[in-house]
Length: 225
Ligand SMILES: Nc1ncnc2c1ncn2[C@@H]1O[C@H](COP(=O)(O)OP(=O)(O)OP(=O)(O)O)[C@@H](O)[C@H]1O
Image (cartoon, rainbow, N blue to C red):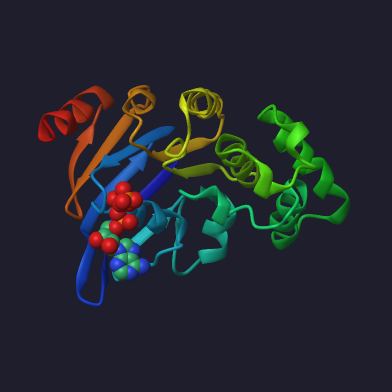
């Protein structure tokens, strides 16, 4: 990945959600930590252009998130904090197909791409299931499959293991570990992020630490002791 924040910041009605930030992200796996309301989701949404900067610019793999919003969206997949807001159609594979259709994938390729993504995560059996009947872990994996089916080069995960029990948390964490795509993950699961190459710590809408996982996680733990 190559992501550049150039004095980018976000404010809502005069309240700052993220102070101006300049930073370059390269590499394959970046974790994001911080207390509730510290600006993590705002930061992540800036990267795929879901949130536009109030000031400054964000560029993802050379594309500006305002000037080339469609290009950025095509290249970055975003798995939302609440998968029930992401998988909206009654049947899982129909939902995956909807996302592919919206991206202009040829009709004949849609079922192939959907099945490829489901089988990659070991959940082919969920394709024909009703999404509202799935467990939290199954739904989280289905949401990830829907994003992977669009073949993004970067996957942004917003608290992917948040709602999960221990078994599903492990399963999703292992899946994330095995992804070949670049990953930016917001997580409170510090054990998972400890395997990431770089971790960013947000506090009160500012980036306050940025470095190797062990050091930044240690700082976060010390702050909250
Ligand atoms: N659309 C919005 N309108 C107004 N305020 C917002 C909006 N989105 C976020 N905020 C505010 O910006 C601040 C940062 O929110 P953000 O969601 O980025 O935090 P977070 O670190 O992801 O929190 P959490 O861990 O609870 O998900 C919060 O004070 C939040 O209330």
